[in-house]
Length: 258
Image (cartoon, rainbow, N blue to C red; front, side, top):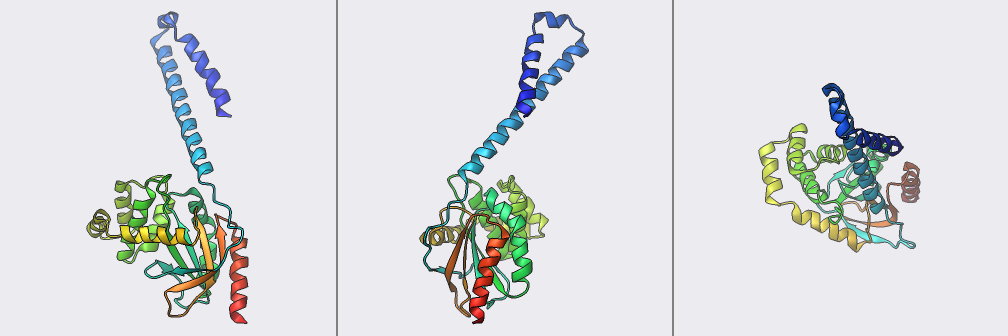
């Protein structure tokens, strides 16, 4: 590991930085100082990596409930992709600062969109479930995505936020609004006013009601044409492999065809 290389170097440098060393040429002393700065920078990188690992361990996806029962989920006003009356509806509860949600959005989500959403088989619905206690920037990011949705760019902001998960401060959100060609003044007015706060809170409450405890969490059920709810019959907890989603969706599609 880097630590094994860094600490001997640090001890060596500390050993040579004694009064006797000051008699050495100025260029050599400058070199030693550069080496010390490099050690400090490396230690900072290691510290950041350890903090990231700690957060990842804290945010390990919760195990799926032992006996998931059917749950009715309200979809009214939630961002969605695909045909309104596609046979199957998949609902994701997610957090823009969650590393597992990012992994899912980059690896599995595109496959589901390609095979099922674009072919008219699945309607995809996104619900916000920011974990405020460990992800302090996630809630405002959820509001930012919804503010983008006001201008017809929800999914563009959704992708931009996950792609830049480590930079979700307020200034960053404004920059992302520019990157997806939003009217920045309208976006800032929406974000600063808190007009989307109640909707995000409502999503959180809905998620807790049906058993969401970690992110990402998914519910799959048959679409109810012209209704704003679905009855979910399957729950998938965590950023599971694509094959698990495929099996669940295919089983429901087969049921709908019978």
